Length: 333
Image 1 (cartoon, rainbow, N blue to C red):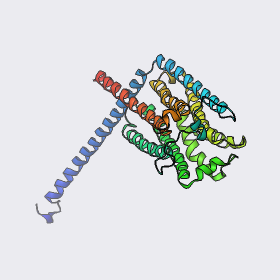
Image 2: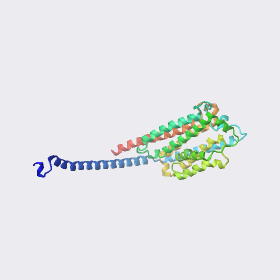
Image 3: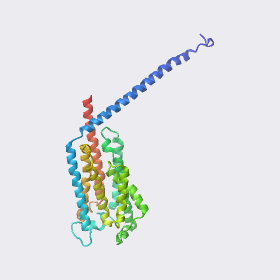
Image 4: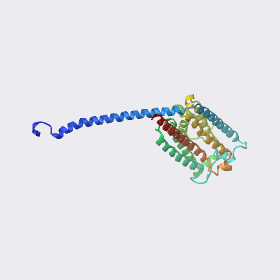
């Protein structure tokens, strides 16, 4: 039949036959893929629930409670000792070099290599390491709980490092010694306090109290940021003890306030360990600055102990969840 007879050409008939078949194949394939994705997501969710339930143990709650309470008490004892022995005329216990600044500072006169400079470098570097691990592992089964506050921990650590960097600039331009020589406690400007609240206190406290909603954390940050001003300000040697005590008290009280079910998770026990090394380092810094701590690098070890402890916590969470995931998959096969 030719093209003038009104019948479609052969290639047209072929297209008319192929298109419906192709559409059906595509639709069927898309449906199959969608169902497969849903099944895979459902399977992963089930596996994650099984992994989570397998990590629950009453021993986690007991050990976590003991660690949280012990470190909290050690932190309160630390600030009590510092307040007492920094009073005029009080001698002993605290290292004299530490009492001058409230920090153990190495290489104060060496530009870009003081303890405050190296704190900035360490905080930035290890925050990047933790950020890479978070990016790779955040969606892995079993990593929802360990990943919960990692971004705020990174932000808080960077804010902490930048604050040290600002102080390091004062070493280089001479303002640090000028401010230290002032008899009166200098009151920071309102704009500085706002920035300090937004980029230091809020992210640090949010990372510390991940189970508290952001509005309440913001209000607590307002109190601890502006509170010292109403009390006449803080002496320079009490600045670091104040920050450390606020963070430790907020962290350990918020952990101890968790429900019994939440405390049975392995993360509760392991997260309480994050503050153990920093607590020990802070005592060594205050007691043995001139003996060995200053020559070993000074305050940078405190900053390093915090962020590295969080990295260890996160790596441990991934190791445990991966092991449990493998075992769970083998059981479901």
